Amino acid sequence: MTLSIYDTLSRTVKAISSSKPTTSMYCCGPTVYRDAHVGNLRTFILSDLIRRTIEISGGSVRLIQNITDVGHISEDVVGQDKILSQAAVEKKDPFDIARVYEAKFHADLALLNVIAADEYPRASQSIDLMIAMITELIAKGFAYVGSDSSVYFDARAFESYGQISGNRLDALKPGYRYEYTDESGKRFHADWALWKTAEERTQMIWDSPWGFGFPGWHIECSAMSMQFLHNHVDLHVGGIDLRFPHHENERAQSNASIGNETVDLWVHGEHLLFEGRKMSKSSGNVVLLSDVVSRGLDPLALRLCFLENRFRSQMDLTWASIESANATLTKWRKKMTQWGGSSKKVVDQEFLDAMENDLDAPRALQRIRAVEKSSQISDADKRAIFMYADKLLALDLSRRKISRSISKEQQSLLNARITARKERRWGDSDALRAELEASGLEISDSATGQEWSWR
Image (cartoon, rainbow, N blue to C red; front, side, top):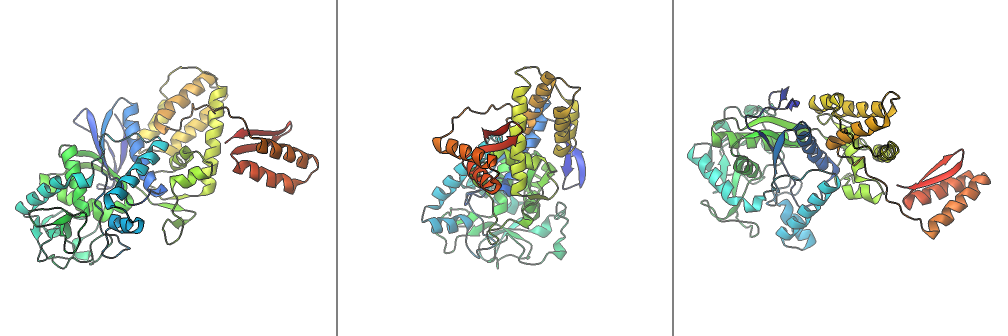
């Protein structure tokens, strides 16, 4: 196993090493109060690519991904838990809300060919684990009960705090993102809540040695990763927005509890822009996988778009790029059919070397395109190389189009367009093309006339 990948903590590209036959991975999962947007999905595909790159060379992976169904305070809804806020909007029980969006999350991953994690522990079912870790942190002098009866981690007690993000405790200002706004009981402004007292909150609370309350956001990942991966994580994955404070705080909690460095490599996927802007509800440009599907595009076109960019580089996603990727998928699948049905198997070292070198997917795709165009490679070998690459790319390149008949309405539009083109009514021809494509057909014009296929 020779995969090397950029480690945020050391700021170097490091080889993934494991003294065990199985690589342990933890990927921060969704907070299930809304649909995952395409930026979230990019991180989950990153985790999937790492897993597939390890496994394609004979390695094995144990992946744990948490489900945050005990929400944390939202940065844009002061004093209100995200799940409770959504439950109020939809007038449902908060745990019913969580289950609905959890199911949607799994459905999206399936559409993107993301291999399911070995376990998806829920925060709500891991409260005892969190309470046990908090109790241990208090006993070891890393946490304390504040004057407001909530429990806080003592950031100054952990000497190497800030190594992931580069932040220094003496430079941190009060009130940074994702932290609670009502923490008057802590001793130092950079401390964070491990357990919050319920106060007036009546839903999603649990009994504890410190009274009824609920866990802080950061403690859940420490408790679950240590429990399900036996106190050591070879590879920890998440979006770059989690680097601080979430992963910084998680590292402090886990290391303080266990007594040594608990994660070998911290891997972060960079920010995703859409049409040149950060995705946000206020901008009205949050894109979901269902939006891609509703446009008649293959959801795997989104996966291909992500593969066209390095995951630790910021990416600007556009509808044009998704549509282009969709066209590429259609072309490659047609090529696979044209290349025959050979079941020959190969290992394409050039493709693998690119992926094992810090997941250089753009270079791996360059190799695939070179194979497609080569006059020196036989059709059987082209198919074999594409099949090998698809074990990692997971684009369903061998998928055959399902034969479907068109409707009478579509046939009528096709006939009308043939007439419009004969009569050089190009405006009408373009309008009819748009209508046909909206119905799910792909239209192309050649010297022999008009051709169509299902998109």
